[in-house]
Length: 288
Image (cartoon, rainbow, N blue to C red; front, side):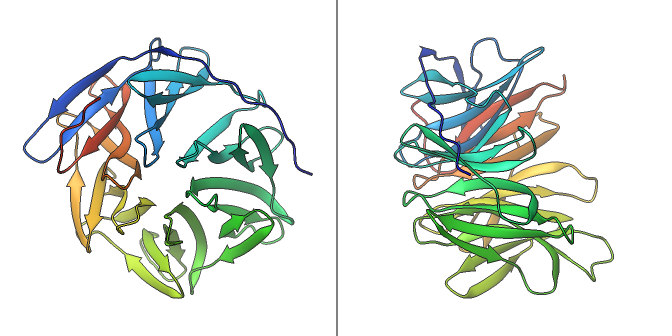
């Protein structure tokens, strides 16, 4: 059954800080009153989705035109917004009465559960309202990726893998995600790029695991890698040349999204164990 609910928003003032180093420029995005923040997605207009954790509650914001716009938790069950497109339609998952994917289309919330699954999670979304994610088979416990648009649905399974998850999709229909191998002695996570009928493995050299999270229309991939010490680093890869992104002084850095301007978003953990949302770019200054 599809549940449709209205979603509302309003506006607050912006609080952002600009930073830079020789490799890239970045801006910290902290909505007022938030203790820990993570930027989970960005669209081609530069609108950023931000998760805000406060002392006893969590909330979500859109950052655009130098202002923060709250997203109301329409199901009161804990939405996680992981995709946004140019129309500001949103995708992700809710944990109300079990994990289910959702798509916010034209300000209406559509909840989706894959038949025969015990868990369904939505992730990335493109401008054609195609979205991707993963689900867990209730009978076998195995995870499978998926791609969907309207009533059209396709399962994604990387050959010889024990589990597949799809995280990002661009306007060409290219998909990135992760998979696990059943014969990997280290149980490392590998990334993949699926375009047309071709699958490419993505492993950033020197890293224990690679998790591509998003891809733009130029084919630039952004995500998170973990080293042998289980320290998380962001990365951006163009033409197969990955650049590791570490916010100066941070303990961990993670990247969740990228748009066609090359703006990437994510979070970093500072030495005081506080998490901050940020948007960065390798080639240009950010006017935010």
